Image (tube, rainbow, N blue to C red; front, side):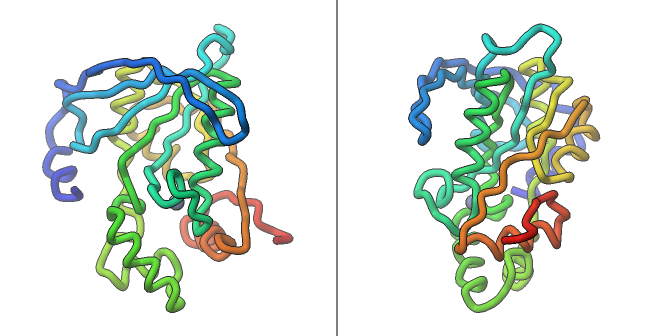
Length: 218
Ligand SMILES: [Zn+2]
């Protein structure tokens, strides 16, 4: 996937377009119900089946800048409820918050920070032998974070979200979106969902990639 992205990044993606929009009622873990407009795309700069969910437009006043979250796919956390990371609770919280304020959630098919599910699980094996989440990828000769957010900027541009408040603790996301032409007018921190099982993972994210996580006292 990295090679594909590198090859294609040399050419502008003027062919990118919205493919379809469909209404999806959703039941959140909190018991709340929301309705999303789910969008698919064609001609994006990477071939993943990325989707966008617009939420809560009825709740947004005209002067309010939309709230946007870039969520990278995590099958184990999002679907299976794995407590090795905090992706599942973060996805639920972001969905609820964006519905309340109005905006867009991008669900990016970047499993395992872009290395894929099986490689992520191989990295888990190494983490259980003492490697941290980034060192494990390096031991497998994989990029510690292979994600590129150009495709996210393309999706946001197609949906008209070119001036946004970004829901994230990851400074790299705001930096890359700005590079790709999105006006990030504010960064809104996400909740931190610490458990005994993911504490080391979160501490490593804060230390290695400067995620702004308030982990003191845990
Ligand atoms: Zn995860």
